Image (cartoon, rainbow, N blue to C red):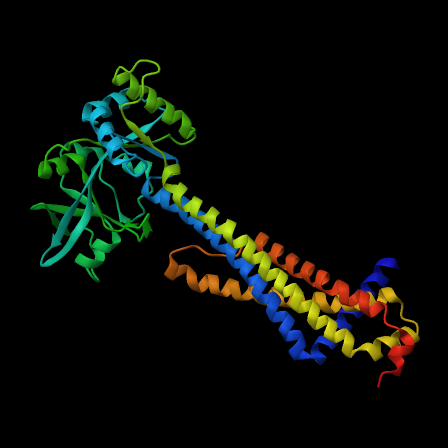
Amino acid sequence: MQPARALFQLRELSSQAAQTCLAHPLRSGLGTLAVAVAVGTLVLVHTTLDGLTLFAQRSAARAFGSDTFVLAQVAASGRVSRRELARMLERNPPLRRADLRFLEAHADGRAIYAPTVQRGADVTAGSRKFERAYLMGTGPALVAIRDLGIARGRFFSEAEERRAAQVAVIGDEIVAALFPGQDALGRTIRVGGRGFQVIGVQGKLGSSGGMSLDRYVYVPLPAYERIYGSPATLSISARAPEGLDVLVAEDRAWASLRARRSLAPGEPDNFDLLTPEAARSFVVNLATRIGAAATPISAMALLAAIVVVTNTTLVSVTQRTREIGVRRAIGATRFQVIHEVLAESALVSFTGGAVGLLVVVVAARLASVPLGLELSVSGRTAVVALAHAAGAGLLAGYYPARRAAHIDVIAALRIE
């Protein structure tokens, strides 16, 4: 009987609270709006931070590959001064094909390597021209290292690399510019005066670090060298095979290159190793700073909402003084009065929280595409937001409820 009685009392309290709110829609609406703004701010902050973190992870995965790293002559230009960069370029020998072959020979199944070299180049097809594409000469293993997002066609093979076949995989922007409304597969593009057959087309990848990932042209490294000659230095992208920890692959590559260069123990590296963490760190740090600034703002908005709901509930108690006095006179206890007032403030706050949550859910879906972020309100965020709303309602209603419970019954009955 006790659970049934408690359920009946809860239903009665909710019904009375709803009737009170509906009887004064302007007053209740003001409190609901205040809580909706506060909860909406809270949900928006958490959703934006989640979206930025996911964006950082996916951007690094698209630009570098998931669980991959890059060996280069110098890969720290954004983290060092010009003087230090000049010293590193002088100290660090360039990476050559011989270094790549040594790494592959000593990989021992712990790492996969692909050479990369990149430069800007104009790409033409018939009378159409795409300026400043990112031309990358690489090896066929790159498709196993990075998710290149090939939507149609394929990447080039080892046989095509060995014979320096003039084949290419092109990005979405280049397809749209050179072959609008047409199928680019099998068509010919020209780079550096040479024709390349399109054998693969990437889907839309977006951007990473402000650089579009849809402007790339991937060709076999030997075909690249036929146009521009041997590069001054190579970058070597690498990753661990499936099922192997990336740290194992990094250690193997690091130890192999140090051995190749005869570096003694304790002697500093004369090459650079770049992990995806370096690419993710900027956006993650930005998200952390936004979170640090936004949390106090959300707390202040919630505090303001509590003040508004407290005031509106006090007004409700004042207007219902005679009604509360009559209820006390016919047997209502102080605890019942307290529960009724708390139910009213909690209902106003919970409704405001639900409205604020719904608005952010809709706004996040509408803003995801133009912002290029995957914004979605997680279930955990929704539960936390509604819990904050209900808690704010109970906190806001505490003082008015205590005041209502201590109303003088005789004085209340005299009020006209």
